[in-house]
Image (cartoon, rainbow, N blue to C red; front, side):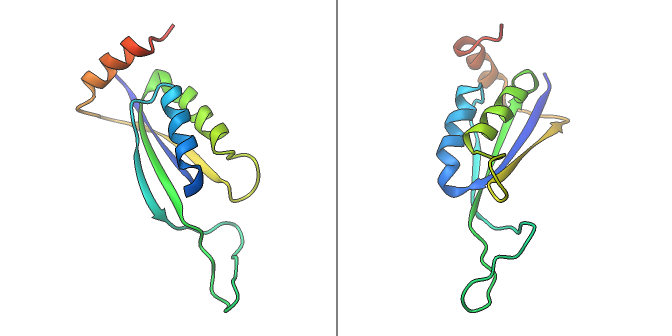
Length: 115
């Protein structure tokens, strides 16, 4: 079986919507890393001349390859990623090997079979 790793970088207040969308699209779960910080195209400077870095969540979703495109599209819509600059990004990477997912995939096939 082949897998993809979907990484979603999104404002923390949109994490729940992204998680719900991924689950509804066929993800079996996710790992969330909170308080990640990053920069955009331009610096945002606050009152004392310090750069403002809004906290982000990084949502890691390991998905079966056949479901990955639907999941990444769903999380992009849920997180409004194409709405404007700074709303977040989602990327999808090939996974060479993944272990410990056999039972997850069996259960997912029962709950949400692919057509």
